[in-house]
Length: 388
Image (tube, one colour):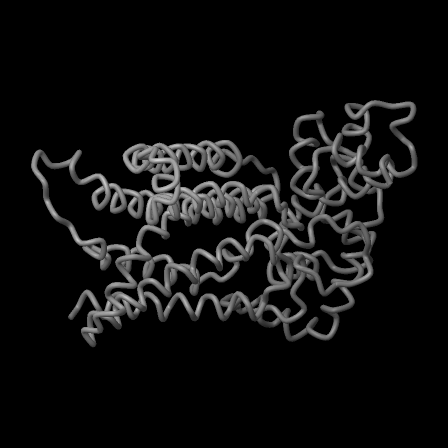
């Protein structure tokens, strides 16, 4: 009974996550599409099996057992989810369906033996080996794509480092969960290799383990829903090149950070009516200035430029900004570099000289910071504007 409750609870949490994701689908439709497909298939399977066991419905049990083999289709979906997460694709590529179609056709053949009946080719044994190799290959592909593009991802901006760390932890946990699913798959379908004699294991055996893993994943997602959207949402404002609005991800007019310092509380009461104006001025400076070409340009200097007390400026960065002052300087330098690039600075200069022109010590930190802000390397950005 406990195992059935686990199945029902995991499917219920899965449907809640799906509902929340669909409610905000515009944030990143393509990345969600693969993840939601995985959530829906898994949750539905767990729901069907849980109801079948609780109410002892034979037809549902039979359907659950027969459909169990089709859950292997999730393996390429896991890979495609990570691929689209990393590359931040905005459009679906139909060629990617090939990852799923090949496995789907093999599953159909294994269940119905269509080619065996037509050509008497006895593919069933070889299909079992095919499934094993297919799953292992995709697990390895997932591992290498995550290791290269997520787990070792570099950043210079503190808020990007926080974002990268969040996604790194999520993908590690998700990858471990996938391996648990795969281990159960191998125990069910390749039991003759694990045991020296024939041991019958029902296809729904140990499904409660899968349910517990999904419960853990769904609770983590519900506690931090940004995980549903990946890099493109967490960093959605960092590639903007204008200062039309202060309503972006960098600033919070209404801060939710609790103030425990009496001096800060008094300062809040004093300048609360000026916060929106300060943020507007800071946002304008962020996108349109050349002050930070000077490496020695400090917060005190910025306070003088804005003609506001430095204590007010420190308060704003502490409670109303997602950027540290160091991040603010780096982003401003990148915006300055974009302006220079768009004004044909590189027609007579190199990227190395551009990096020093806008205030970086060398090209390497400029390159990393450029990718953090623009979501493209300098060469990719230059190619994109040249192709327009």
